Structures are given as structure tokens and as C-alpha cells.
Amino acid sequence: MPRRRLLQVTPVMPAPTGGGLAMRAASTLKALSRHFDVDLLVVPVAGAATIPSDFVLRHAATVQCLDLEGHLDPHFALIARLKDPAHREQALRAYPKPHLSRYCTGDGARYLYQWRDRRAVAAIHVMRLYLAPFADLFLRLPDGERPLCVLDLDDDEPLTRRRLADLHLRRGDRESAEREQSELRKYAAFAARYLPAFDRVTVCSTTDADRLARQHTRARFAVVPNGYDMEKVNRPTPSASGPLRLLFVGTLDYFPNSDAARFLCTDVGEALHRLSDREMEIDIVGSGGDGLAGDLDDSGARVHGYVPSVTPFYAAADVAIIPIRAGGGTRIKILEAFAHRVPVVSTTIGAEGLDAIDGQHLLVGDDAESLARACLRVKSSPALAHSLAEQAAALCSASHGAAAIEKAIGDVYRL
Image 1 (cartoon, rainbow, N blue to C red):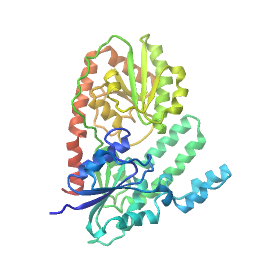
Image 2: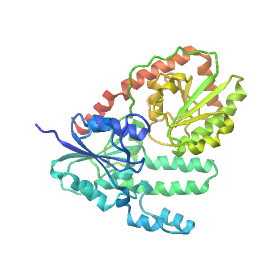
Image 3: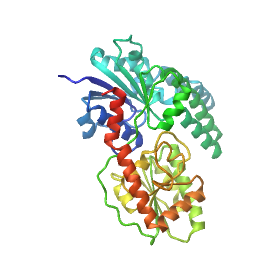
Image 4: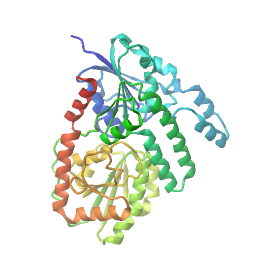
């Protein structure tokens, strides 16, 4: 019996390692492919168009990558041609859609609609609110003809934009804060329009689901957790001797991550040196860090940029530190550290949405000194370091492994 077809639309090529967005797209694709023949459309607004990997080719029946140049909104193209920076900025803020939706045109929606015989499509799964317009033609179909339409928000975009605006203001960048506030209003309008229109709306935590359900009473929310799967690793026995080795992993051209790296190397680093004479080593790993390396020269941190595997860095680290001060959803970088059995120290926002308990699975601090004290506490107590790492790994396996994600996807599609 032929399997049903599903259209999956993502803003990045799925990948089981690397950035969090690509990893969520990959875990979703893997889970969906157990029940559907998945036709994957990549709209590469969150990453460069890349050749599908063996992983993608194993799990997708067909793969297409949208040509962005041929689908740019003509309205946005006119704005981009304005020569006066002030006029261009004013026009960008007046542009009615989120910036990442500038390729969501009627032609793009028709491209998806006509790609496969719509009568053979059982479901459409769109990742991220800004790509929701790609489903417009499916959403307009009458009952009985319309496939099941699922929107994966991943996180709460208006909340994320509000936090980004607040962080820019804290850093004294009013222009960037106003730009984020403009984006916030656009995402809020998209949410009001699209969340009730889809049959299901998925988010990555019950925290987001409960908050959004109060705001959008006509939408139907479900939780599909972020995940990280790997073989059991053998960690060296924690030691209280030697330097304190801190590791931060993240895509460094994403503002909350670059801010976190700077905060770590300045405020947290200064607090560490003030509180202890222990030698410190800070490793920062992630793509997009070319400009950051020069800014952090004086801190002594080592900025490694993209690496083929993060496993050697986790193996050498005493603490995976997550000093995130803005953002939304859940941080896959924490799950990655949990899976590698490395003790985690995080801000409250960094650990948001996870069922991780302060003092049991990780340590939490929200200012430079409390983060520094937590890192020193982990280093000075091998028993605490071991306990945190083991309990966090168990939580990751039980709640964020492949089985948990497949069950959540099955519940969404009632499989």
C-alpha cells in the first residue's frame, strides 16, 4: 500500500548536527519520514542553500531548494533600491511582513501548491511563523479537500523580538531596538492571522504552549520537544585540580549568541578573576565568529569558528556555560552538553522551557557573579559535577531523545 505524502517546508537544510534550527528540522524530518513520504522544500532564509546530505536523502522522498532570487517580494526589492539610508530604514519598518518573510510571495505559495498533486498530499508541515504564507493556498481549501496543516513555531517570535529589543537597549543600541520592536509588531500580526488558521501549532515546550494558548484561544497547540541523540560517551572523571575550562557553543552571527560570548569574556571573566586565582580557559565554538575573534583578543578566549565535531571540545571542558540574555524556545546547545555529560551553567532564559531543575540537572545564574560562582562551584566539587552531568544525561535521553520526538510527532498527526 503506497504511503501518504507530506510536504515539509523549512527555512534551512535539515542537519543532525550544527545550528539548532537545522537540528530541529532534521529531527522533525526523521520522525515524519517514519509515517510519510516527505517532499522537502527548503526556503534557505536562515542559512545558505546547500546540497542535501546523505541524512536528508535517506529521509526525504524528494528535495527542492527554492531559488530566493526569483521569489523576492517586488515591494521589498523596491525598498532595497532606496539610496538614502534613512529613507530605506523607514521603508523597511513600514514593510508589512517580517524581514524573513520577504520571499513568501504568491508565486512561492503557488510553487508549493503545484509541486505535487495536491489531492495526493495528506499533510503540510511548515516550520517557523515567517514561512506560514507558503501554506496560504492549502489553508483556503474547503473541508474535505484540505490536507492537515501544521505550523511549527519552534519558539514564540513576538516574545523573542521583545527580548532582543530589550537587550539592544541594555547595550545602548536604540536603533537596533526600534528595528526589533518593528519586527515584533509584524510577528504579532502574523501570529493573530495564522495560528488559528492551521489545524495544529507546535512549539518546543509546555512553557511556550501554555503562554501562547492564553493569547490565541482559537489555536490548537501541541508540544514537540527539541532533541539531541547520541551514543553514550565516556567522560573523564571530574577533577578539582588544573585550570577551569569553560566552553560556549553557538552560531556566532546570531545576536543573542554573540552577546553571550562577549558577556562571558568580559563580565563573567572579570568576576571569575575577582573571585578566584585559578587559571581560566575559555573556548568559543561556532560558525560566524570571524568578527567576534578580534573583539575578544584581549580576553584570552579562543574563538574556533566552525568545527567538524564539537565532541573533542566537550571532552576537554569542565563546564558548558550558556550565558544567554535573550531568545526564545529551548536551547539545543544545552541538550547537546547534557548528552555529552558535561555540567551546565546557564542563565534562566538559557534554560527556559526545559524540565531541568537548578541544582539537580544544571546550575542557574542571571548575573556575571552568580554565573562565575556556579562555574567555580562545579570545578571545585567533582561529586557535584558528576551528579549534574549524569542526571542531565538521563533527562535528555528520556525527554529529548528520538523516541520522545517521534511520539510527539505521532500525537500531532494522530498516528
